[in-house]
Length: 467
Image (tube, rainbow, N blue to C red; front, side, top):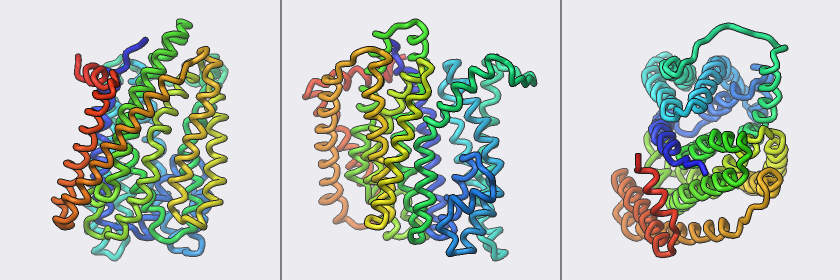
């Protein structure tokens, strides 16, 4: 069995810096712009470059619901034009990340997005006064910051690439057998990994028909949800894939089963308690991060509701990446792709059925259910690759973690409700509540795991801190 803990630690540290700065960026956006039609237009435009589609046609499709507000649709198109070069820069940054991960370097590529976030903060702050003094919409400064940040995210990885021995020589041949082999794997892998993004794009189309602010509320909730998902779920899956690929090359099926089980246990140990704690403390967490400047208490309430539904899906989304990694290790990209298609179908059907009843809250609920369907399909099919897997111990382990997490989350909620809320709504009280109540929730979770003799509690701590 490959020990992936050291790689996960490096990836998590780098990602933590990036994600914290990402939340800081969202704080700046919330304070400067609030939740308005302009921020809805920005969020819609920001998603378009990532979809590799025609510029103007797609602006009208992705934000179709903005058609009844011509000025909002026009703003979306203008912002898309500014941000479209971001596609090239972020693609190069992703390529550099994959190269370095293959070489066993996880910290530099994981911390590179932090530089994107820094420029995404500084540029709109610097240009806010320029646009407002001239009667323009300051949201344009945010779009320029996105482009600058994408370029820097790629550039900061270049020194590490060259130190790892990379040298570029122009060569292009569509007949090259290696090129054809890579493309045969790339297309289904890209589609499979893009399932969540496709769901997100479909959601964008549908939510554009709802009230102003809906898209912005969902975006802010999604950003908080991505903190534990990126720190733990994506980290474990990213580090596990090279290890699984080596074991697959050696045809070590037992090693693959053990590594997959270890990665799933690790990711559930990290994501279940953090997700439950955030769910119980969704309102104070949202308030601390976003409720400044033009971001109102009503905005906080809306984001907190969406966040609650999003975080329930974090363990499933995190586990999904680890199970899918087994198929990719065997160069089977089609099975995850088909499972992704099924989840997209579930997402669209549920959104269409629920959005008129639940409004914007239908979207995080549908996304969570779609993730459950996706991972369930892969769990059913993975024995075809690695042989029979006894999932009984894993489900018992998950049940124990869930019970301990709920107990810890409830304790954190009680602390917030009866100790901190009576003290008032000031920022420092809310911050103290999040730190103390959240810390108490995680501490009680850990203590209960020790009482329940969950051996992984001590084992993972030892593996993360050991050199």
